[in-house]
Length: 307
Ligand code: RIB
Image (cartoon, rainbow, N blue to C red; front, side, top):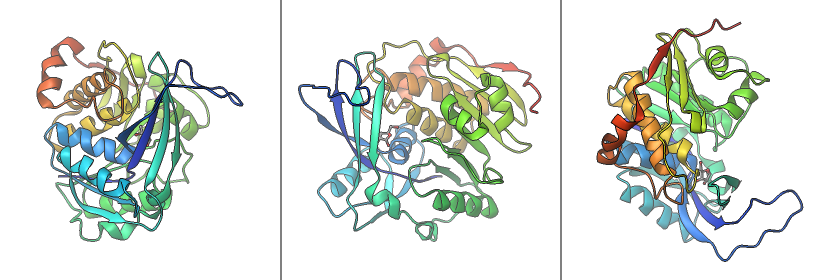
């Protein structure tokens, strides 16, 4: 079973011709409300692929709370771990330009109250996968990963948004998933993809580095893999990373080997870009399976030595 401890947001999505630069005002005709939050998006992506998923997070005492809860339920996520907060529900303002690129501002609100004790009755142990991101307080995320590792669960951290971490913080992480920007924040410098993944992997840790239109690379105890991106007509890249992470976690939790889980993740991420919004384009299992062949198989490589 997959447990997701993380954020849930109401996304206010604005379609603009071009993203604003600092000091610039940009007009657009209107806005839409969508389901969001990296944690909730990843939970929904995994559930849509057939994984059994429980979500642990918090929403506020406002009209968004029940709407956000329903959105997760409709995706097939178990929400008994979704608690309340006195702060407003998390809210994101997302501008999407004509090329599908985005700019995201998040008011964390209730996500700031997500706490470690929410996992007390979660049954962490062997056979469980814990998936975390970086949109709730970092000490809670790191505490949850340590607790899960000690209990014998598999641990996955998608360190998004970017952060630098205290020494040893990655020790309890089995799978670290980052994009190039997040990898550079962790390493303190930008390296070629294979080198960055090798530098962030460990003796018992796999690092998966997502590369947008270039696909992804993974380096772990069993070597390196490159997986291509699915060729798609991009409408909106919002949530593509979340779809990748959710699908990868669903695959690993369901017993897929890393290359197969990576392929599933890459297809799910690509398909998500074909629709507007972080969740609207998330595919189900049949849609992913229908496109797996057109992806091309992941290719093994010998990772460079990490310095
Ligand atoms: O990754 C996309 C998500 O980031 C959005 O849904 C927004 O809520 C922010 O959390």
